[in-house]
Amino acid sequence: MYFDTLTALWYMDGHGIYVWVAYALTAALLIAMVRLPISRFRRHWGWVEAERRRTSVSSPAETEEKGG
Amino acid sequence: MWTIIHKMGSPPWFFRFSGALVRWLLPLTIALLCVGAFWGLLIAPPDFRQGNSYRIIYIHVPAAVVALAGYYVMAFAGAVSLIWRIKMADVTMRAAAPVGAALTAIALFTGAIWGKPTWGAWWVWDARITSMLLLFFLYLGVVALFEAYENKTAAARACAVLSLIGTVNIPIIYKSVDWWYSLHQPASIKFMGESAIDSSMLYPLLLMIAAFYCLFVVAVLLNMRAEVLWRHRESGWIQQLVERA
Image (tube, rainbow over all chains, first blue to last red; front, side, top):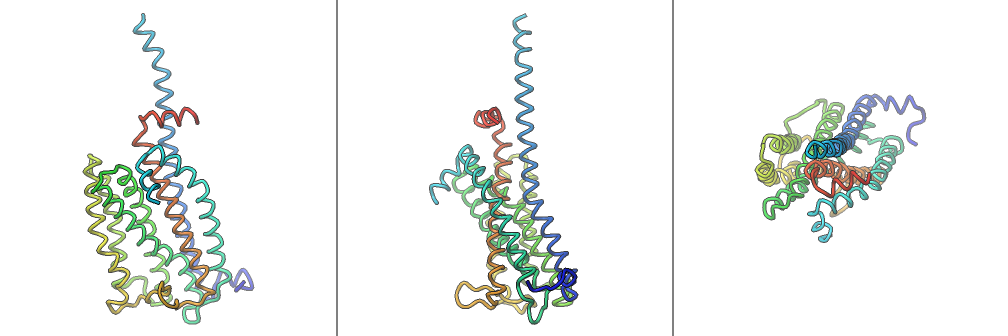
């Protein structure tokens, strides 16, 4: 381990602000790169499920209507 | 390899394959990122000239390397789409564009942050940096073109042409530091010959490059899965998958 204390790690001889800001912004973008397509997938999956439910609910009613 | 590429043309096969691949590749990526970042931030020694600010290299270089490689993936998919009219190639191109744009953005802003303590400036209109900015706009252009067209086949064709034209920029980015006088340092890692970086700094860098490559694959596959699901939402195989879930 290069740094002896947490303060030294945070300060990094005056370069800490640059290093930590760069890592924080990168982490945020990397997380977004994975989270966004996952939530889009879930949204689409939910849509397909809702569509299936809607058609399965409306189908018997339609049949009844036609039969009556 | 060719068998996998051939099978990728089938959306149901891709859906099963990508699901299994992402399930083990995502934890591996997270592990590689954690170990690489820990090694680069806490264990690697500081640079004798740049001090600790050089630790930005562990995110800046991997993001730039994978952003360039990602462009070739997008352009290759564009060529396949133009020549063989394979729909999955359109999906790949569309999925790679936002991921490549995000990685280029990371390379640009980490470079700007690193530039301040090193060069005394956030930004310079240097050949390497300007060509990277052009790469960012090319990625954004592909994203915007896909959204601009109502007809998705025409959109894919326009994006493929733009991607292929943009490949001219990639060797310019690679060679810009050799061709023009530049503030940007030349490549530290060399495929031929000895690298200009000590092994204590090189190993975590290689680990982070591997992690970013894995992350690129994961992000593109996740984007592709969302796109395939939406395009085939009416298909029987998707209905069966939803029913079984």
